[in-house]
Image (cartoon, rainbow, N blue to C red; front, side, top):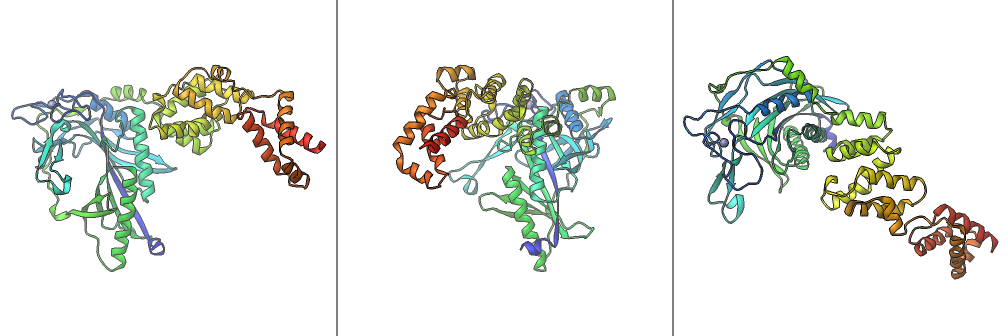
Length: 483
Ligand SMILES: [Zn+2]
């Protein structure tokens, strides 16, 4: 398969829907909070009663411009809204207000692993509601469905890439980066599982070197980064197989079945809608002046790519550490606070990507949920650097700092965790261990020098890891050579 696969080139374009974090909906003042009781956040406007008029939420326009600037887009001076017509039970108006030929942003790009992925456009639209498939046996066996309109009218940005993505992995990294950016901008919470970031993929294959695109297939229902990558891997293999066997790819929309790991046909091109777009008569066109764009540009925060660059170039972090830190806005903020006060940002990065990350993952926490502060982490690193505590002891201190908070120095004092560097104290323990283990001493004398590891381990056991390891090694070498 791999051999056959290298004959082909993959072309992927992605459409990402980002739900904007506004308090109220796009054209009315119904609330947008996720997970509320069904149909508790609706009004005549978002449920499409006759005679109602939409009023545009100005935050939506600001968020769209902010996102456009972060994605290096051109911001339109003139833009407008259009009606997209289709019937579906979760769309009570039978129209969706969207943007057709004059999107608010166009011609942008982001850089993913040193490669530029172009953004074709970003447009604003309203979300539809949600069908809840009821019935005892879940979706497949439902005898009826219910509809929840809480989501109708929640503002969305649709971010459409050019077909510049050439592998499933690159597609995943692109969406991860988009997620980072909207989270940094604080315009979307980027939660794929809750559907606040949703992704459809267009994928085709063509023989290496061929200029024309192959027939593309759209894949829907990609609810996680893993699903996105897996679905694309499956679909590429399916298309290559089909072509190799002399078949033809049909332009269609396919659904990813996560539980079975396959895509299935949903509808072909012939069944696709004619949406009959026309300008929304109830909303005035958008006029966006340069001053407004300038004001919004001033609010752009340092973005993940800029952070990664600063971390590696200015602070000397490894590319891996810089990536892990910048991939989480909470960790990045924490690291920035710590880097501002510590003399050893590299050590702070090591702790954040090592023990701290492992603890957060295991307990499903964000760093902001813990009691750790930039000050207490800095203090702990100082204690290590001065030799007051060993790295092994620090691994315990960091857990206490996260769970209970407080000062690292105080924890070390209260729990008696300082490294024992008293030569006579360690010397006594060393002599005791030698006396208790004559067989090991024999081995050492017979030339098996690595036995020293066993001796050091015994001292660490006796001192609960607090003995100064350098001193322990030195004293053993001295004592053993004497015997
Ligand atoms: Zn409403």
